[in-house]
Image (cartoon, rainbow, N blue to C red):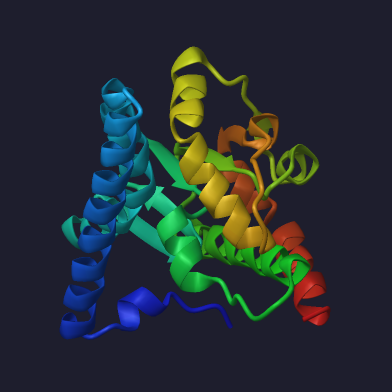
Length: 224
C-alpha cells in the first residue's frame, strides 16, 4: 500500500529535512550564480533562482497548504484545493508527493501503475464523501498526466482546451515536471506537455460511474 512517508516523520525529522532542503537550495543557487557571474551571464541568476523555486516550492507549499486547510489529500497522490464557487480542483500529486510516496526500488512500470491506483483511490474517497447527497451541484476539475482522455470520458469527465494562463504555468514549471517525470520513470525524462491533461465534469456524473472506478481498481490490484 502506498504511504506518504513525510507525514510519518516526527517534528525533529521534519525540521532536519527542511534544514537540508534550505541548505541545498542556497548551495545550488550560490554555485550557479557564481558560475554565471564568471561567465559574464550574471543577469541569468534571477532566472535560475525563479526556476529553482518552482522545484523546491512544492516541498513547502503542499505541507503548509494541508496544515492551513487550503489543500486536502484524498489519497497520497490526489490533492484537492479548497472548494471555491462550487468547483473542486484536483491535482495528481506534486513533485513533493512523488518524492515521498513512490517506491524507488520498484520498476518504472510498477510506479506508474501505483500512481494510477492512488488516483483511483482518491476519486473513490471523494465519491464516498459526497455520494449520500441527492445532488451536489459541484463541478470538478482534474489536472493529470496519468489519467488519459479515454478513461476520463468513461468517468464523465471531458478534456478541456489548455488556455494561455495554464500553458504559461506548465512551461514555467517545466523543470519541476521534468523532475517529477524522472522520479516516476527512474531516468531523466523530459515531459510531453501535450500529455498533461485538464478534465472537467459534474461530480454527480462521477458518482454515477463509481462502479466503473471500482472495477478498474480491482483489475489493477490483481496485477499487484
